[in-house]
Image 1 (tube, rainbow, N blue to C red):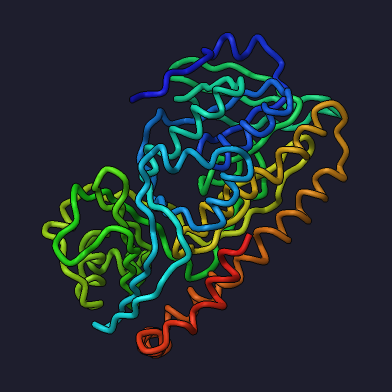
Image 2 (image 1 turned 135 degrees about the vertical axis):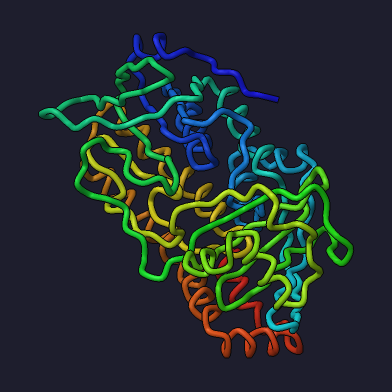
Length: 385
């Protein structure tokens, strides 16, 4: 069911907002909700309309579930009928390692993202989809920032005391900024597709990951019986294979997983390079949160956990900045982000590096196949609250 706007462009432009959040993915809608719960007047905008498909998979690991529970949204996952995740099967060159997972959940991004937006609206957040946004430069010691919104043939300037940029991997929000998001050399692109149903050989409750020299393909069944398939792929290999679907078929086949018929004919969606670094985490009356703050190739729902946790961390800082902006707030955000997100990305960096090497991949999968308990320390670091 489509989520209707709660405000139109002209009405939004007539108000001065405490906080304007650009991007209504999990980081944006969650931060909008948390700031609004503190009494702020919040405008949440996104260039898409909802529900919409996202390439990033909908795996919620234990840390994601803990964050949701902590802020009173623990019921969301259950109400959506999310599939409990308890197992992880890693495969390479027909070797399979089956690992037990701490309890997580798999849910479609259409359902999950839409639910978080509705929860934000319940707290009083004004929602305006279908608009593109850019942050205009600061003029003097302004007590407000201006965001230019465009919708079809209409354009308006909207003012807010604090801006939260949660616009994902798309890049910098600031208009005419010389600073750009940089991607790491050798970074893979993301790709995803929803499949109507699994083929025999795949079970609900399991994350399946096939690893090859050109990338990896992961999949899990979500609440409505569909399969959410997401991949991180070498862009040159995609071209050589003839497309995303063709390369995904090859990786699944090489790993020894059951093939999906006509996988290359499905409508895959791609992303920019995944592993990237943001030029900054904000500026004057401006915080960057979620994927826009930097991203590392995730594996079993880590990306969602980073987004949700970052949103909860930035909300009190944004609220304090409404009345009295202090550059120290931005420094505190940098420190919090480094402690709670950047440091925890180390395991994903290490794992991604190891899985790029065929020899270490085979050794890893072969070792885990006979001694799955070796993965416990890694899972503990990624999932602990």
